[in-house]
Amino acid sequence: MKTITFAIPCYNSAAYMDKCIESLLAIGDDIEIIIVNDGSTKDNTAEIADSWQERYPDIVRAIHKENGGHGSAVNCGLAHATGTYFKVVDSDDWLDKHAMDEIMVYLREQAKAENPTDLIIANYVYEKVHEGSRTVMHYRNVFPEGREFGWNEVGHFLPSQYLLMHSVIYRTQLLRDMGLELPEHCFYVDNIFVYVPLPHVKTIYYRDVDMYRYFIGREDQSVNEDVMKGRIDQQLRVTRTMINAVELPDGVSEERLERYMENYLSMMLCICSIFLRMIGTDEAEDKREEIWDYLKEHNPRVYRRVRRSVLNLGTNIPTSFGRFIGITGYHVAQRLFKFN
Image (cartoon, rainbow, N blue to C red; front, side, top):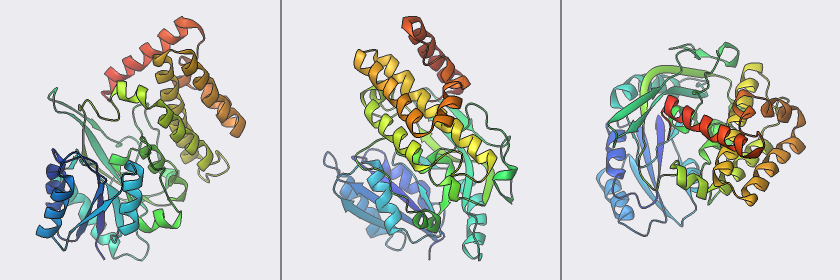
């Protein structure tokens, strides 16, 4: 069995996937790289994937499937994974070798352990290549460093700190045992990936190293502001899935985890509200009210707390002035925390 499986969802990724794959190959030969060609048609992604498999048959596997979206590609990677651990790396991103050298020491130990740690966490870096800037997102104020711990030892997350797909490595069997399956033909499913499994996680390990390099700047990127407005229905779909998947607070045994998950859900509602207000049509306003009504119907207790949270106090003020306040607040946070 391999120590870790890296799944790389690829859709017309020929222009940048080599850099991603090369960064993973530098990690060692006890890894597995699954390149999932998700129905690419506009370039030679398929041929590139096959060539890597031919060159490194003991490490790289190329899987070709019909287009199903990012979640479908992750599902495919997980279904075929043989590693003790599982990590998703998007095809335009890459991993830092020095950081992974440290993390792999721990993963290799755990791969031989009777009860391996459930979740490994490290830092990620927003790489705004076109601007020549980078922003490190760390958790050193939240987690103990360099040892296994549980949710009862987790500290306070700052407003800019959330666990993203970039920062997590799961134990593969944990994801399989809980039956994780991401929606197909839908963007933003990474939020489900870093939210729904958490109540199943009992043991955690954090390493304060800058592991994941998250490329920001392509015009067609899913986090581009105009793209997000065009895909708002998918953001709403993901948010509803998260509301349904975990019943807060009853579905979570640890108070600190419950508080974090509530804050994450609050952030999702905030994003939905802000982008619907950016769209500014009557239909968008109806959708904004509908997503809040959905939360209220499914979980009235969480609705009351999330609606009154700091994140959402300004996003739902009625009138055009309220819309201005909400959007302005979002852009201020965008500049402060350097996301998107």
